[in-house]
Figure 1 (tube, rainbow, N blue to C red):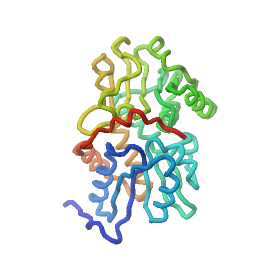
Figure 2: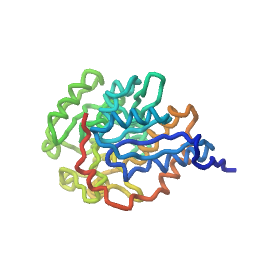
Figure 3: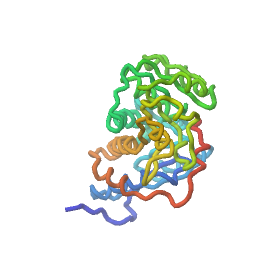
Figure 4: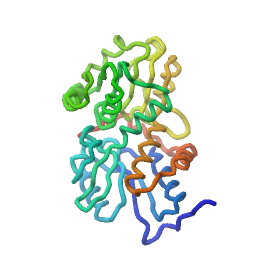
Length: 303
């Protein structure tokens, strides 16, 4: 028998997502389904917050007694700096995607690391050990990917970004800590150096744009790449995934990464085992946004 939670009332505890854009997000569907399944008097909402307003938003959510927050682009690095405490996952990555309230203030966590690692194994069937790994992006999502990949002992990790200085900064910041070769490279060097069997990760919001394209023509690269687009779209794959598959590469989007990181966040907030299958079903059945989110293609994670 399904447990039903009461309607929203004076005792309902709020949780939420802060980012820009958030119109595409499936996190509310996933977490609200989990609350309903466990009979919890709670609600999860998405809030579009400008970078210059993030500090005020976090202070306001804490003052209002929010039970926890998720953080998405472009705020992951900034959120860590605004937190009072940081778990090892957030300190190592230099970014936070989950905030947990404590007496001292928000405590930063990064559940993207385990979410990404689990999705690689589940969706791509991939063990990165000994492989060359390319990451497009240099924000909080890219940092989580670097840490997750480093734990699997790849041959090397190469970070690319349209702003080369940001890629250089990421490599310098994480290189000494991750214990594997980590280098920044120019975006235009990828096509000439990539080879079948390499892993390519888009750690950007580019895939949210229905007209998005890779910086390279993947059809000109011999088939056999493993491609992971951290972005996701309701009701179908991202254009980046479709382009990669059409070129003969094995490609997936970030839907199961969303599920895994969300389940980990739910456990941190509530202290209860997350109803993972209920959350998965909610993701599979959630409708997409009813207006374009093409502005996401122009968002770059900033610190």
